Image (cartoon, rainbow, N blue to C red; front, side, top):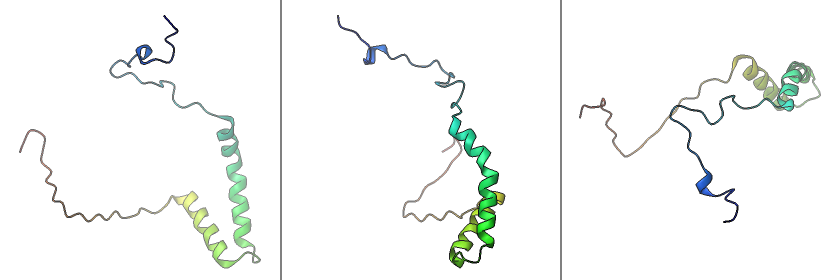
Length: 94
């Protein structure tokens, strides 16, 4: 019989409670580089914010980006309108 590699018969399911990637996502060199460059990028944004030659709307965007990095983005309200009525009950009770 031919090589079975790549066929569905070779697939083995994970045991219950077992992860397919137990050591997690591997760190890549570019992620390390980005972490090292973050302070420099923030300094660059701060310098651009003070530069009067840059258009005001661009400076506003820079200020928003700096605040978002420092404090996190503000929470956005979620509004959902649906014509369908949904009833939520406790499990086992109807």
